Image (tube, rainbow over all chains, first blue to last red; front, side, top):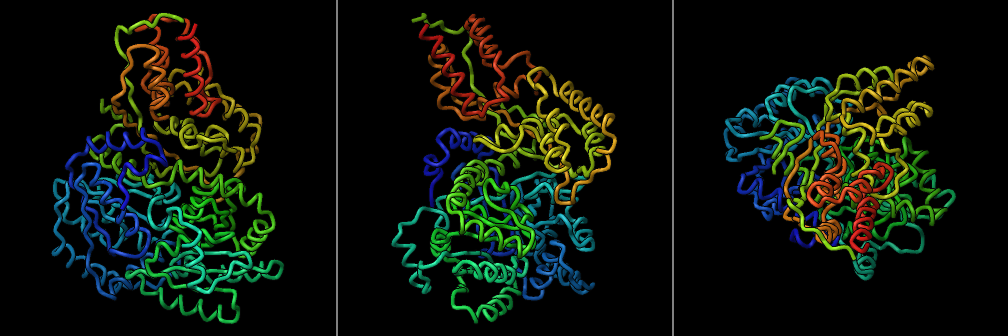
Length: 404
Length: 223
């Protein structure tokens, strides 16, 4: 795993020095991260990188995972969908299941952090163990239009935290606690984003039987209805009427997402008739994801809802032209017609893909602008800085904090 | 070549790091925007008039303040957008004064164009008020003369330059930017201090600002 100093050639030594300054102000503070899955999905991915890096900066960062059975994760998946605004049948039994598992976790999880950093709704009830330490709830979900029943249920917990963190301004609402905007990030030196030699890229294409004889359109995402893989296939089919191209839908599933396999099977069934559609199950193979993104001519992220949409940042970091839905945190990453193209429908996505495949110079320019935007705003070093400022804000309520 | 003067007090470079605090306040119409501008904390006004400086360090299509961008791009009120974007921030020595100027511009426009009140932004295009929380930290960089000062300017972060030029004056209520203050009071070079104070930093990218200040100082050393 890369050391902090290795980022200097990307962001410059002075910014690394700033991180060290902040680290000194928080030296030896115990930051206890808690979420619901050690692998799969954006949260685990970020924590995998963030925890050791915070440690390198002098903080005592830890990561614990709550326990939960199939029933619990079925309910939290329903919560997740409902918070994203999808219609979900929620019964009292669902809330009871959530509370039963939460009570077990409250009993079993050892809380030892000076700052307890809770990620997403699954472990939210642990706040009942709050003592004299500081607690933060980090919401990675698009809650701009949540199911009010679920949101109301969670509010009873949220208001007991010291601060909440959201990924986009539209997710915020009036709360009696402080709330901060912190976008997630990508790690430019991770296997998923580092530079790859052409032979690695070619080897991955060969492994999956993909030839570079026609343009490649790719969406990398978990197999999840909210990522709209069916919509991506429809958009691709519209493009294919005019441009001979191929489609890669690649991604994995997470252990806290019981619906993943079902969606994967449906998508595979739909793609059966077209040999140019490649449906790839890529469980935690970051080099392969990286290679497929780099081999692509256009990257798509046609989500219906997004917490943030880190795959957009990954694609832009590789200077790829991106067509993505204007949802969640995606408009923060793409300025329409400047660093990518935003869409609102299957037809819109298809039109934009055609436009990019037909105008490679325009596509190249969008990709270059996108990379610059990601470099300035969405790399893990900025994220580390924001988290350390967030920790400091717990002890300093002012708008201007002088630490001189 | 001018003889280098040793400063009475060295210049201690600080850096300013910023965190965005959400308020949950949002506007859908120009009327709502106006009434919220009147009541939000100074930290919100500061955020929406200065955010662009740090977030878009390269050439960007965004106009340099969020109010102007929203009014033009979302509500289609280009004339008001132009009036807001051209507010000369350098003229104002406090956020309160800057806020009053913004309020005055919107009220005057609404009085001439009452129909502008009827335009609504779509839900996903609402204006979200955000507060800027600043953390000011000392760096290890200290300069005793102009040569050292220029040398450090070449390597410190743009956040540090940003702090000493913009934030010290507007948010901490100092009469001038920190660089001009030190050059005049510790080096006694009033003319150079004036040169740095006079140019409008709001019309440049921060890297351009860095290069311009270094150029002025190096020319002064070579005089």
